[in-house]
Image 1: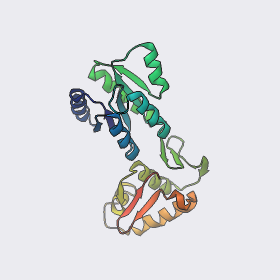
Image 2: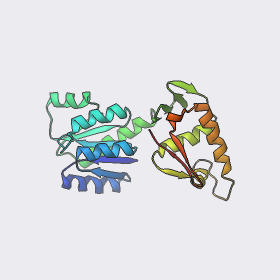
Image 3: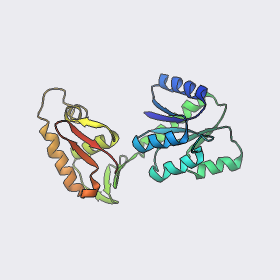
Image 4: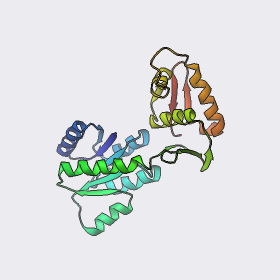
Length: 221
């Protein structure tokens, strides 16, 4: 699981990064709201730890901006603000949880685990106008259901989960087909053509690009 920490206090960042990496999480950090927003625009995170008082873009405004783009990723505020009104304001902005500084690291880890457990049953992946509801095993394009075969569903899910990364054909064979020996990678192109046809992707919806001789990359436009 990949966690983004948006926090400007270096000591807290180092403490959280080391502790969460020891718990097995992949960690990316940003020391101001502007950098945090830039990272969120270009990467997919599984959870965001967000300080309220940030330089450039404060945590409250950043939370609102995230929710315009992403309705799914859990956001936990880390802040010294603790009045009822401030808590309500943070939740209304789109935060899922709220933990007051100074906090127990053990409590934070447990809260993170709870959000990840909740995600497993209701994860929705998005790619432009495409949505995949993993719990219901359905694909939607502009809210219309698209019927894919099991392998097509697995391939599209894999590309969206790795959004922004080039997925080589050999890696796709290994991770999706579970083939660990030399095999004709042309089979992937056949499935990709079928997926594109079923999704009826228009020119302006070029969400999955072919990297000639290498593989594919999925990106929001």
